[in-house]
Length: 317
Ligand code: ASP
Image (tube, rainbow, N blue to C red):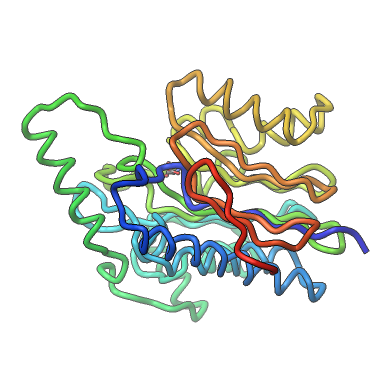
């Protein structure tokens, strides 16, 4: 029996600490811990990494604190279009959905695409319909709306009307949730889910549902889930590039992820982060922004979460 591990992120667009009350930060940490515990319960009882990453992402999608599912960013039209994917490192099977509007947990739809269709990616109304036919929870589009996103969209539009050239902050721009895991059988899996970014054009699709860009898993190598401007992750094939650096270049998980985040992605001037786990249960969570909601449970079975520089222990798993 090998080691087990799980790591999650809640996006690299963390607000500055003083822009939110301590009660909100504490609730954010609690939701991160709940996500980790959901995954750990599966891994500890011998369950699959694939089930663990799905369970972890569902908890984050249902939390208003992250840009995925409930609490997702709004498009320029003022509604939600959600993207998600999941990948099984054991078989390289993968599934994704883009621009879904009515499925409460897009990651479940991604899993259904992987297991119950011959496709890897299904988009738009067809993806909503596919999820509905698979028996997934259907909600009205405004189920996903929170006051924070409505305010952020209004502020961005007001700035655009005034012609203010102040660029959007990382917190206004980014968010996404993701999970990576290693199970007792040595299988790796990754999943990612997002609302994209505030004020995104309708129909825009980012890296999160794209295998190799925002999500990648391959047994014996690593599992990766990214956050940051998806266009650059796609152009860099960032998640796959981490795996390629390890597989072909002999890099360690740490070397590979640092090169991708702090050199390649950073060279485009974007905020970026990711979580990744390797075949030995090693965990990394590099980011180049002010903070990144994140957490992990590794060999010592302690739950660790953080939103800014420091990590906080939330007790045993
Ligand atoms: N990667 C996501 C996207 O481009 C957004 C983010 O993580 O900030 O859709």
